[in-house]
Length: 470
Image 1 (tube, rainbow, N blue to C red):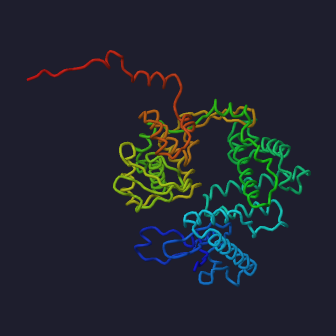
Image 2: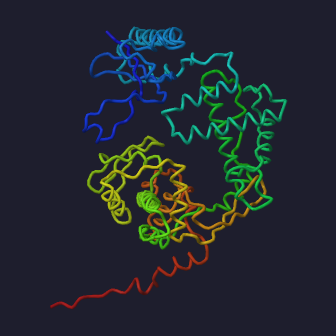
Image 3: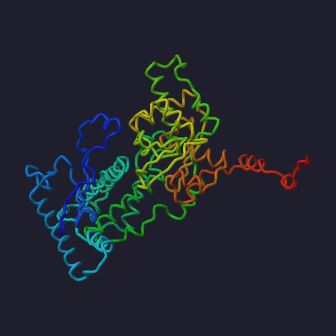
Protein backbone atom coordinates (compact mmCIF):
# COMPACT_ATOMS: atom_id res chain seq x y z
CA UNK A 1 0.00 0.00 0.00
CA UNK A 2 1.29 3.44 -0.94
CA UNK A 3 2.36 5.77 1.86
CA UNK A 4 2.82 9.56 1.74
CA UNK A 5 5.39 11.49 3.75
CA UNK A 6 6.31 15.16 3.89
CA UNK A 7 10.03 15.92 4.16
CA UNK A 8 12.00 19.15 4.35
CA UNK A 9 14.47 19.92 1.58
CA UNK A 10 17.20 21.12 3.96
CA UNK A 11 16.23 20.72 7.62
CA UNK A 12 19.76 21.15 8.97
CA UNK A 13 22.71 23.40 8.27
CA UNK A 14 25.30 21.74 6.04
CA UNK A 15 28.15 20.38 8.15
CA UNK A 16 31.79 20.54 7.16
CA UNK A 17 33.81 17.34 7.07
CA UNK A 18 35.54 18.42 10.29
CA UNK A 19 32.20 18.88 12.06
CA UNK A 20 31.12 15.44 10.84
CA UNK A 21 34.38 13.92 12.04
CA UNK A 22 33.98 15.56 15.46
CA UNK A 23 30.40 14.20 15.53
CA UNK A 24 29.00 17.60 16.34
CA UNK A 25 25.19 17.66 16.69
CA UNK A 26 23.19 18.85 13.74
CA UNK A 27 21.86 22.41 13.87
CA UNK A 28 18.50 23.41 12.39
CA UNK A 29 18.67 25.40 9.18
CA UNK A 30 17.84 29.01 10.24
CA UNK A 31 16.31 29.76 6.83
CA UNK A 32 12.99 28.69 5.39
CA UNK A 33 13.16 25.49 3.38
CA UNK A 34 10.85 23.83 0.89
CA UNK A 35 8.55 20.89 1.65
CA UNK A 36 8.59 17.86 -0.62
CA UNK A 37 5.85 15.25 -0.78
CA UNK A 38 7.08 11.66 -1.15
CA UNK A 39 4.73 8.94 -2.34
CA UNK A 40 6.37 5.68 -1.26
CA UNK A 41 5.39 2.35 -2.81
CA UNK A 42 8.30 0.36 -1.44
CA UNK A 43 12.01 0.75 -0.70
CA UNK A 44 12.96 0.97 -4.38
CA UNK A 45 10.02 2.99 -5.68
CA UNK A 46 9.55 6.49 -4.32
CA UNK A 47 8.14 9.53 -6.10
CA UNK A 48 9.43 12.96 -5.03
CA UNK A 49 6.88 15.71 -5.67
CA UNK A 50 7.86 19.36 -5.25
CA UNK A 51 5.41 21.57 -3.37
CA UNK A 52 5.36 25.33 -2.99
CA UNK A 53 5.17 25.18 0.81
CA UNK A 54 8.11 26.73 2.66
CA UNK A 55 8.62 26.50 6.42
CA UNK A 56 11.31 27.19 9.02
CA UNK A 57 12.68 23.85 10.31
CA UNK A 58 12.33 25.04 13.92
CA UNK A 59 8.56 25.27 13.34
CA UNK A 60 8.32 21.73 11.91
CA UNK A 61 7.17 18.72 13.94
CA UNK A 62 9.23 15.91 12.41
CA UNK A 63 7.30 13.10 14.11
CA UNK A 64 3.83 14.39 13.22
CA UNK A 65 4.93 15.81 9.84
CA UNK A 66 3.24 19.14 10.31
CA UNK A 67 3.67 22.60 11.73
CA UNK A 68 4.08 22.57 15.51
CA UNK A 69 0.75 23.11 17.24
CA UNK A 70 2.08 26.03 19.29
CA UNK A 71 3.00 27.97 16.14
CA UNK A 72 0.73 30.64 14.68
CA UNK A 73 -1.46 29.41 11.83
CA UNK A 74 -0.55 25.76 12.44
CA UNK A 75 -4.13 24.44 12.20
CA UNK A 76 -4.81 26.06 8.83
CA UNK A 77 -1.36 25.14 7.52
CA UNK A 78 -1.67 21.49 8.54
CA UNK A 79 -5.21 21.24 7.16
CA UNK A 80 -3.91 22.39 3.79
CA UNK A 81 -1.10 19.82 3.91
CA UNK A 82 -3.63 17.11 4.66
CA UNK A 83 -5.67 18.14 1.60
CA UNK A 84 -2.54 18.14 -0.53
CA UNK A 85 -1.57 14.63 0.60
CA UNK A 86 -5.09 13.35 -0.01
CA UNK A 87 -5.22 14.90 -3.50
CA UNK A 88 -1.92 13.30 -4.50
CA UNK A 89 -2.93 9.94 -3.06
CA UNK A 90 -6.31 10.06 -4.82
CA UNK A 91 -4.59 10.97 -8.08
CA UNK A 92 -2.27 7.97 -7.69
CA UNK A 93 -5.21 5.63 -7.01
CA UNK A 94 -7.04 6.97 -10.08
CA UNK A 95 -3.98 6.37 -12.26
CA UNK A 96 -3.49 2.73 -11.27
CA UNK A 97 -7.23 2.11 -11.52
CA UNK A 98 -7.54 3.51 -15.04
CA UNK A 99 -4.12 2.35 -16.24
CA UNK A 100 -3.09 -0.72 -14.21
CA UNK A 101 -0.24 -1.50 -16.62
CA UNK A 102 1.32 1.96 -16.55
CA UNK A 103 5.11 1.74 -15.88
CA UNK A 104 6.38 3.24 -12.63
CA UNK A 105 8.48 5.89 -14.43
CA UNK A 106 5.39 7.15 -16.22
CA UNK A 107 3.37 7.18 -12.98
CA UNK A 108 6.17 9.24 -11.44
CA UNK A 109 6.18 11.79 -14.27
CA UNK A 110 2.38 12.06 -14.20
CA UNK A 111 2.25 12.73 -10.45
CA UNK A 112 5.07 15.29 -10.63
CA UNK A 113 3.21 17.16 -13.37
CA UNK A 114 0.03 16.95 -11.31
CA UNK A 115 1.91 18.47 -8.36
CA UNK A 116 2.77 21.51 -10.49
CA UNK A 117 -0.92 22.19 -11.16
CA UNK A 118 -1.85 22.49 -7.49
CA UNK A 119 -2.78 26.03 -6.55
CA UNK A 120 -0.63 27.44 -3.78
CA UNK A 121 -2.97 27.71 -0.84
CA UNK A 122 -0.72 29.64 1.53
CA UNK A 123 -1.29 32.80 -0.56
CA UNK A 124 -4.66 34.49 -0.10
CA UNK A 125 -6.55 36.69 -2.55
CA UNK A 126 -6.89 39.37 0.09
CA UNK A 127 -3.15 40.03 0.04
CA UNK A 128 -1.73 43.06 -1.72
CA UNK A 129 0.98 43.27 -4.37
CA UNK A 130 3.84 43.75 -1.90
CA UNK A 131 2.60 40.98 0.36
CA UNK A 132 2.80 38.64 -2.61
CA UNK A 133 6.30 39.96 -3.28
CA UNK A 134 7.28 39.19 0.32
CA UNK A 135 5.95 35.64 -0.07
CA UNK A 136 7.92 35.28 -3.29
CA UNK A 137 11.17 36.39 -1.63
CA UNK A 138 10.46 34.03 1.26
CA UNK A 139 9.95 31.13 -1.15
CA UNK A 140 13.36 31.85 -2.73
CA UNK A 141 15.25 31.23 0.51
CA UNK A 142 17.33 28.11 0.18
CA UNK A 143 16.79 28.16 -3.60
CA UNK A 144 18.98 31.13 -4.56
CA UNK A 145 21.90 32.99 -3.03
CA UNK A 146 21.33 35.65 -0.33
CA UNK A 147 22.66 38.24 -2.83
CA UNK A 148 19.81 37.42 -5.23
CA UNK A 149 17.22 37.82 -2.47
CA UNK A 150 18.91 41.09 -1.50
CA UNK A 151 18.49 42.22 -5.11
CA UNK A 152 14.74 41.63 -4.87
CA UNK A 153 14.72 43.64 -1.66
CA UNK A 154 16.23 46.57 -3.58
CA UNK A 155 13.57 46.19 -6.27
CA UNK A 156 10.85 46.24 -3.63
CA UNK A 157 12.21 49.46 -2.11
CA UNK A 158 12.43 51.12 -5.52
CA UNK A 159 8.85 50.12 -6.37
CA UNK A 160 7.60 51.49 -3.06
CA UNK A 161 9.42 54.78 -3.71
CA UNK A 162 8.00 54.82 -7.23
CA UNK A 163 4.34 54.50 -6.16
CA UNK A 164 4.84 57.17 -3.49
CA UNK A 165 5.54 59.64 -6.32
CA UNK A 166 2.94 58.25 -8.72
CA UNK A 167 -0.56 58.37 -7.28
CA UNK A 168 -1.90 56.43 -10.25
CA UNK A 169 -0.12 53.36 -8.88
CA UNK A 170 -0.81 54.04 -5.22
CA UNK A 171 -2.69 50.71 -4.89
CA UNK A 172 -0.46 48.67 -7.17
CA UNK A 173 -1.96 45.48 -8.62
CA UNK A 174 -0.82 42.98 -11.25
CA UNK A 175 -3.33 44.38 -13.73
CA UNK A 176 -1.41 47.70 -13.63
CA UNK A 177 1.84 46.08 -14.78
CA UNK A 178 1.60 47.12 -18.44
CA UNK A 179 3.81 49.03 -20.88
CA UNK A 180 2.75 52.40 -19.47
CA UNK A 181 3.75 51.23 -15.99
CA UNK A 182 7.09 49.98 -17.28
CA UNK A 183 7.83 53.25 -19.09
CA UNK A 184 6.98 55.29 -15.99
CA UNK A 185 9.04 53.02 -13.72
CA UNK A 186 12.08 53.11 -16.02
CA UNK A 187 11.84 56.90 -16.22
CA UNK A 188 11.73 56.98 -12.41
CA UNK A 189 14.85 54.80 -12.15
CA UNK A 190 16.76 57.06 -14.55
CA UNK A 191 16.09 60.06 -12.29
CA UNK A 192 16.99 58.47 -8.97
CA UNK A 193 19.02 60.84 -6.76
CA UNK A 194 22.63 59.82 -6.17
CA UNK A 195 23.37 57.48 -3.28
CA UNK A 196 26.05 54.92 -2.43
CA UNK A 197 28.34 54.11 -5.37
CA UNK A 198 26.39 56.49 -7.60
CA UNK A 199 28.18 59.34 -5.80
CA UNK A 200 31.55 58.12 -7.11
CA UNK A 201 30.63 59.07 -10.67
CA UNK A 202 31.77 62.41 -12.19
CA UNK A 203 29.92 65.53 -11.07
CA UNK A 204 26.70 66.07 -12.98
CA UNK A 205 26.41 62.37 -13.87
CA UNK A 206 25.56 60.85 -10.50
CA UNK A 207 21.77 60.68 -10.72
CA UNK A 208 19.97 57.68 -12.20
CA UNK A 209 20.68 53.96 -11.94
CA UNK A 210 22.98 52.47 -14.56
CA UNK A 211 21.57 50.67 -17.59
CA UNK A 212 22.63 47.25 -16.26
CA UNK A 213 20.93 47.90 -12.91
CA UNK A 214 17.79 49.05 -14.69
CA UNK A 215 17.77 45.82 -16.70
CA UNK A 216 18.20 43.69 -13.56
CA UNK A 217 15.25 45.42 -11.90
CA UNK A 218 13.03 44.71 -14.91
CA UNK A 219 14.14 41.06 -14.97
CA UNK A 220 13.36 40.73 -11.25
CA UNK A 221 9.91 42.20 -11.79
CA UNK A 222 9.27 39.79 -14.67
CA UNK A 223 10.40 36.83 -12.59
CA UNK A 224 8.02 37.77 -9.80
CA UNK A 225 5.09 38.27 -12.19
CA UNK A 226 5.76 34.88 -13.76
CA UNK A 227 5.83 33.21 -10.34
CA UNK A 228 2.51 34.83 -9.44
CA UNK A 229 0.95 33.88 -12.78
CA UNK A 230 1.92 30.24 -12.35
CA UNK A 231 -0.02 30.26 -9.10
CA UNK A 232 -3.13 32.00 -10.46
CA UNK A 233 -2.56 35.19 -8.46
CA UNK A 234 -1.61 37.14 -11.55
CA UNK A 235 -3.86 36.74 -14.58
CA UNK A 236 -2.11 39.39 -16.70
CA UNK A 237 0.80 38.55 -18.98
CA UNK A 238 1.83 41.86 -20.53
CA UNK A 239 5.04 41.64 -18.49
CA UNK A 240 6.24 38.92 -20.90
CA UNK A 241 6.62 41.59 -23.59
CA UNK A 242 8.99 43.70 -21.49
CA UNK A 243 12.58 43.93 -22.73
CA UNK A 244 15.44 44.49 -20.31
CA UNK A 245 17.25 46.55 -22.96
CA UNK A 246 15.73 48.46 -25.82
CA UNK A 247 17.30 47.76 -29.20
CA UNK A 248 19.25 51.04 -29.06
CA UNK A 249 20.49 50.40 -25.52
CA UNK A 250 21.48 46.85 -26.43
CA UNK A 251 23.73 48.27 -29.18
CA UNK A 252 25.25 50.80 -26.77
CA UNK A 253 25.93 48.11 -24.19
CA UNK A 254 27.54 45.86 -26.80
CA UNK A 255 29.80 48.65 -28.07
CA UNK A 256 30.98 49.61 -24.60
CA UNK A 257 31.23 46.27 -22.79
CA UNK A 258 34.03 47.32 -20.43
CA UNK A 259 35.13 44.44 -18.21
CA UNK A 260 37.64 45.24 -15.47
CA UNK A 261 40.09 42.38 -14.97
CA UNK A 262 43.74 42.12 -13.96
CA UNK A 263 46.28 41.54 -16.69
CA UNK A 264 48.64 38.58 -16.31
CA UNK A 265 51.52 40.85 -15.14
CA UNK A 266 49.19 42.54 -12.63
CA UNK A 267 48.03 39.17 -11.33
CA UNK A 268 51.63 38.01 -10.91
CA UNK A 269 52.46 41.24 -9.09
CA UNK A 270 49.47 40.90 -6.77
CA UNK A 271 50.11 37.21 -6.10
CA UNK A 272 53.78 37.86 -5.26
CA UNK A 273 53.13 40.79 -2.93
CA UNK A 274 54.41 40.13 0.59
CA UNK A 275 52.15 42.21 2.79
CA UNK A 276 54.15 41.34 5.90
CA UNK A 277 56.93 43.54 4.50
CA UNK A 278 54.62 46.56 4.32
CA UNK A 279 55.74 48.23 7.54
CA UNK A 280 53.16 50.99 7.28
CA UNK A 281 50.43 48.37 7.75
CA UNK A 282 49.29 47.04 11.09
CA UNK A 283 49.92 43.34 11.78
CA UNK A 284 46.17 42.77 11.52
CA UNK A 285 45.93 44.41 8.09
CA UNK A 286 49.00 42.53 6.84
CA UNK A 287 47.30 39.25 7.71
CA UNK A 288 43.88 40.29 6.34
CA UNK A 289 45.26 41.53 3.02
CA UNK A 290 47.28 38.36 2.54
CA UNK A 291 44.23 36.16 3.12
CA UNK A 292 42.02 38.28 0.87
CA UNK A 293 44.66 38.19 -1.88
CA UNK A 294 44.89 34.40 -1.63
CA UNK A 295 41.13 33.95 -1.75
CA UNK A 296 40.92 36.26 -4.77
CA UNK A 297 43.72 34.40 -6.57
CA UNK A 298 42.05 31.06 -5.82
CA UNK A 299 39.02 32.45 -7.66
CA UNK A 300 41.23 33.55 -10.56
CA UNK A 301 42.99 30.20 -10.92
CA UNK A 302 39.79 28.13 -10.72
CA UNK A 303 37.60 30.70 -12.59
CA UNK A 304 34.61 29.87 -10.39
CA UNK A 305 31.81 31.92 -8.86
CA UNK A 306 32.04 33.37 -5.37
CA UNK A 307 29.00 31.31 -4.32
CA UNK A 308 30.95 28.09 -5.00
CA UNK A 309 34.23 29.33 -3.54
CA UNK A 310 32.64 30.26 -0.23
CA UNK A 311 31.11 26.75 -0.08
CA UNK A 312 34.42 24.99 -0.75
CA UNK A 313 35.07 21.89 1.34
CA UNK A 314 38.14 19.66 1.45
CA UNK A 315 35.98 16.62 0.65
CA UNK A 316 35.42 18.09 -2.84
CA UNK A 317 39.08 17.59 -3.78
CA UNK A 318 40.01 14.35 -5.54
CA UNK A 319 43.72 14.42 -6.34
CA UNK A 320 44.16 17.41 -8.66
CA UNK A 321 40.43 17.70 -9.44
CA UNK A 322 37.83 19.85 -7.69
CA UNK A 323 34.36 18.30 -7.96
CA UNK A 324 31.21 20.01 -6.70
CA UNK A 325 27.66 20.92 -7.58
CA UNK A 326 27.50 24.55 -8.78
CA UNK A 327 25.25 26.52 -6.43
CA UNK A 328 23.79 28.72 -9.17
CA UNK A 329 23.15 26.11 -11.87
CA UNK A 330 22.91 22.97 -9.66
CA UNK A 331 25.09 21.19 -12.24
CA UNK A 332 27.94 18.77 -11.42
CA UNK A 333 31.20 20.64 -12.00
CA UNK A 334 34.72 19.29 -12.46
CA UNK A 335 37.74 21.62 -12.37
CA UNK A 336 41.16 20.23 -13.30
CA UNK A 337 43.70 21.92 -11.02
CA UNK A 338 46.57 21.64 -13.49
CA UNK A 339 48.60 24.19 -15.45
CA UNK A 340 47.39 27.71 -14.70
CA UNK A 341 44.91 26.32 -12.13
CA UNK A 342 47.55 24.29 -10.27
CA UNK A 343 48.46 27.33 -8.15
CA UNK A 344 45.04 26.89 -6.51
CA UNK A 345 46.41 23.74 -4.83
CA UNK A 346 49.29 25.78 -3.36
CA UNK A 347 46.73 28.11 -1.80
CA UNK A 348 44.67 25.19 -0.45
CA UNK A 349 47.74 23.57 1.08
CA UNK A 350 48.73 26.90 2.63
CA UNK A 351 45.45 26.98 4.56
CA UNK A 352 45.20 23.21 5.12
CA UNK A 353 42.25 23.13 2.72
CA UNK A 354 40.25 25.58 4.88
CA UNK A 355 39.94 28.69 2.71
CA UNK A 356 39.73 32.07 4.48
CA UNK A 357 36.19 33.25 5.23
CA UNK A 358 34.90 36.78 4.69
CA UNK A 359 31.51 38.35 4.24
CA UNK A 360 31.12 39.55 0.68
CA UNK A 361 31.03 43.21 1.73
CA UNK A 362 34.22 42.90 3.80
CA UNK A 363 35.95 40.93 1.06
CA UNK A 364 35.22 43.57 -1.58
CA UNK A 365 36.39 46.35 0.73
CA UNK A 366 39.65 44.63 1.72
CA UNK A 367 40.31 43.53 -1.86
CA UNK A 368 40.31 47.13 -3.08
CA UNK A 369 42.63 48.13 -0.25
CA UNK A 370 45.00 45.17 -0.72
CA UNK A 371 45.25 45.71 -4.48
CA UNK A 372 46.00 49.37 -3.85
CA UNK A 373 48.83 48.47 -1.47
CA UNK A 374 50.13 46.02 -4.08
CA UNK A 375 50.29 48.82 -6.66
CA UNK A 376 47.36 47.77 -8.87
CA UNK A 377 46.49 51.42 -9.30
CA UNK A 378 46.74 52.11 -13.03
CA UNK A 379 44.13 54.69 -14.06
CA UNK A 380 41.24 52.77 -15.63
CA UNK A 381 38.28 54.12 -17.55
CA UNK A 382 34.96 52.38 -18.07
CA UNK A 383 31.90 53.48 -20.01
CA UNK A 384 28.42 53.09 -18.56
CA UNK A 385 24.97 54.41 -19.42
CA UNK A 386 22.00 55.92 -17.66
CA UNK A 387 19.41 55.52 -20.37
CA UNK A 388 21.03 56.98 -23.50
CA UNK A 389 23.43 59.18 -21.53
CA UNK A 390 27.02 57.98 -21.71
CA UNK A 391 29.03 58.16 -18.49
CA UNK A 392 32.81 57.90 -18.44
CA UNK A 393 34.17 56.78 -15.07
CA UNK A 394 37.93 56.99 -14.43
CA UNK A 395 39.46 55.63 -11.23
CA UNK A 396 42.49 53.61 -10.09
CA UNK A 397 42.00 50.01 -11.13
CA UNK A 398 41.89 48.68 -7.57
CA UNK A 399 38.76 50.80 -6.98
CA UNK A 400 36.83 48.72 -9.55
CA UNK A 401 37.76 45.32 -8.14
CA UNK A 402 35.26 43.01 -6.45
CA UNK A 403 34.60 39.32 -5.94
CA UNK A 404 33.51 38.77 -9.55
CA UNK A 405 36.75 40.35 -10.79
CA UNK A 406 38.51 37.09 -9.96
CA UNK A 407 36.37 35.08 -12.39
CA UNK A 408 36.68 37.83 -15.00
CA UNK A 409 40.45 37.88 -14.61
CA UNK A 410 40.71 34.10 -14.98
CA UNK A 411 38.55 34.05 -18.11
CA UNK A 412 40.46 36.96 -19.67
CA UNK A 413 43.87 35.35 -19.06
CA UNK A 414 42.80 31.94 -20.38
CA UNK A 415 41.39 33.49 -23.56
CA UNK A 416 43.94 36.20 -24.28
CA UNK A 417 47.23 35.06 -22.74
CA UNK A 418 46.95 31.29 -23.07
CA UNK A 419 44.68 31.29 -26.15
CA UNK A 420 42.58 28.49 -24.71
CA UNK A 421 39.76 27.21 -26.90
CA UNK A 422 36.53 29.07 -26.04
CA UNK A 423 34.61 25.80 -25.78
CA UNK A 424 37.04 24.52 -23.14
CA UNK A 425 36.79 27.81 -21.22
CA UNK A 426 32.98 27.50 -21.28
CA UNK A 427 33.28 23.98 -19.84
CA UNK A 428 35.35 25.41 -16.98
CA UNK A 429 33.19 28.45 -16.29
CA UNK A 430 29.81 26.82 -16.87
CA UNK A 431 28.75 29.46 -19.41
CA UNK A 432 26.24 28.22 -21.97
CA UNK A 433 26.42 31.12 -24.43
CA UNK A 434 29.55 31.80 -26.45
CA UNK A 435 28.53 35.45 -26.78
CA UNK A 436 29.14 35.89 -23.05
CA UNK A 437 32.82 35.01 -23.49
CA UNK A 438 33.31 37.25 -26.51
CA UNK A 439 33.18 40.28 -24.23
CA UNK A 440 36.42 39.06 -22.59
CA UNK A 441 38.43 38.77 -25.80
CA UNK A 442 40.69 41.76 -26.36
CA UNK A 443 40.01 43.41 -29.70
CA UNK A 444 42.26 46.50 -29.61
CA UNK A 445 44.94 46.96 -32.29
CA UNK A 446 47.88 46.17 -29.96
CA UNK A 447 46.32 42.86 -28.86
CA UNK A 448 45.48 42.01 -32.47
CA UNK A 449 49.04 42.71 -33.63
CA UNK A 450 50.46 40.64 -30.77
CA UNK A 451 48.18 37.72 -31.67
CA UNK A 452 49.13 37.89 -35.35
CA UNK A 453 52.85 38.05 -34.51
CA UNK A 454 52.58 34.68 -32.76
CA UNK A 455 51.60 33.02 -36.05
CA UNK A 456 54.24 31.69 -38.48
CA UNK A 457 54.95 32.10 -42.19
CA UNK A 458 53.53 29.46 -44.51
CA UNK A 459 56.96 28.40 -45.70
CA UNK A 460 58.07 27.85 -42.09
CA UNK A 461 55.16 25.48 -41.59
CA UNK A 462 56.17 23.52 -44.69
CA UNK A 463 59.83 23.17 -43.69
CA UNK A 464 60.54 19.57 -42.72
CA UNK A 465 63.78 18.36 -41.14
CA UNK A 466 64.89 14.78 -41.87
CA UNK A 467 67.36 12.90 -39.75
CA UNK A 468 70.12 11.13 -41.66
CA UNK A 469 69.98 7.38 -41.52
CA UNK A 470 72.84 5.89 -39.58
